[in-house]
Image (tube, rainbow, N blue to C red; front, side, top):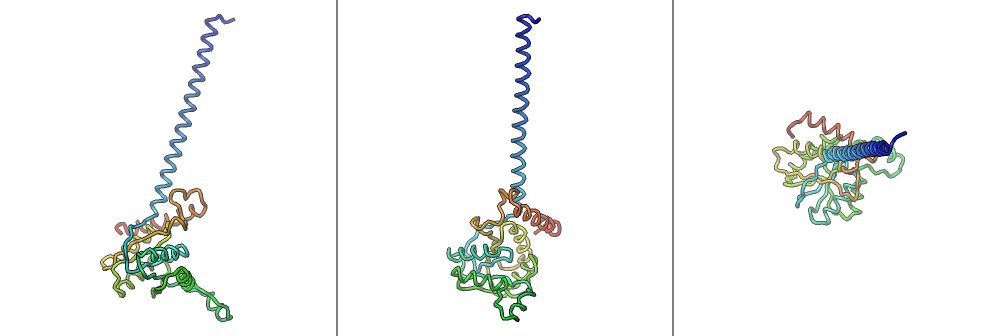
Length: 228
């Protein structure tokens, strides 16, 4: 049998063992919190890497990029009503093989351009321009906009973009307008019309898809044009 002193030693050893176990658990918990915080910081940085939102001022015209859709029309209308510009321009739609068939059958049909014009008019925008040309992708938007701005003599243009597309679009526009008199400002759609949240994109399926798709395209653009 253990004596009194042996019992106390056993109790002290047991307490010491549990103290070390508790300390180890606390260290593991603290480390997990640190890893989670680092993970969130990395994911947020990846999200914001896709975003470019320039400070805007009065411009000759506001242009809605193809990717901005209805949110772009809403944002452009709000900018017009705030006095930033009085005109809004939209890019031409891609060729739509379905439209002519609807028309042939006597059924009214609106392509993207007609739908955007209707939305802007309903939102109180009175002067709407249609940019001529053919646009199949982001690179086309840059070249078409550069030629049109040169012909129109615009000195400053605000381009409304979706959030996830804004960084790559700005790179393309800056390349296309390099050496031109036109200054371009890229402005993302309002947080009221969210299409991508750089602070929480990993928690939404659409956010993950946008991050992967736009991240790959942005990386390719950087590889192809390191200085842009």
